[in-house]
Structure formats: structure tokens, C-alpha cells
Image (cartoon, rainbow, N blue to C red; front, side, top):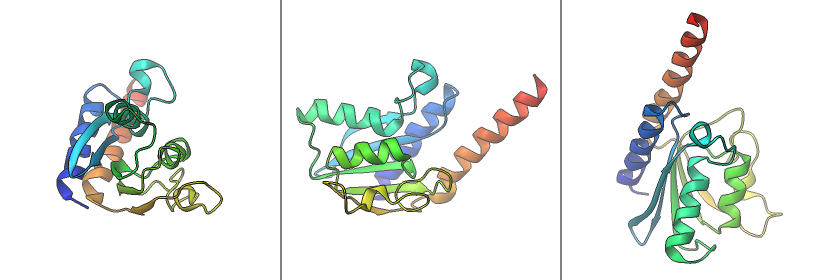
Length: 153
């Protein structure tokens, strides 16, 4: 695990924040180099599957010309949701590093252990809590501001 990659995922989350998206960022690394970067774009695209992890996986697959991302690592600012955890497993990404836990929908360990489910063809190891405060603050502040704006409208 390298901190610089999580810091880049945080920079991606900050880009999402600038366009009023839920601030989650992801970075995929292979052989110590970033091969893709992404941030949430569900509102911008009006597409429910445009989460940071999905976009980063799509970009990495295109770059490597393969749907198998063996030997890659993904760094994401929040624990992956069910869709993203499934995509990580399907893409064969063996290592997942995330910032803050997601008690309502996290699928590494918080809600459902998708990444380590023995019934799937592929499992991933994971480590959570990397730059937890920074990642958590981005989300908390975003939703606090959203709630405040809603009461003012």
C-alpha cells in the first residue's frame, strides 16, 4: 500500500465535489504506476452505474486491452458498494485499499463481505481506514451542505 495513491484518489474525490457529485475517487495501479483515475459522475451523466470504481475499471480495461485486471490494485476513498465490489471481483483486481467505511452499503466488511465471499470466482484482499479522516470529512461535509441547501430552498 502506498499513501501517494490514496492521496490521488482523494484528489479525484475533490473533483467530484467541484461538480456537486458525491465525493468519491478511485485510482487503479499496476506495477507501481497509476493506469486510471476516476471520480463519481452519476449526476453529470444521469447514469446510476457511473461510480468512481466502475469508471476507473473501464479505463484500466481499455488501457490494458483486457477485462482481467490481474496484478492491479484499486485505491478508493470509500468502501465499495455492492455494484462496485462485484465489478472489482469480476475484473479480478486482487487488492483493494479504501479510506472510510460505509456502514449502510460497504461490501468489504461493513455490510456484506462481497470482496471475500468464497462463493465467487475471485476474491480480493482489502485494507480500510487509509486516510480515513480526510475521506470521511469529504463525504460528511458534502451531505451536510446538501441537507443545509435543501432546508434553504
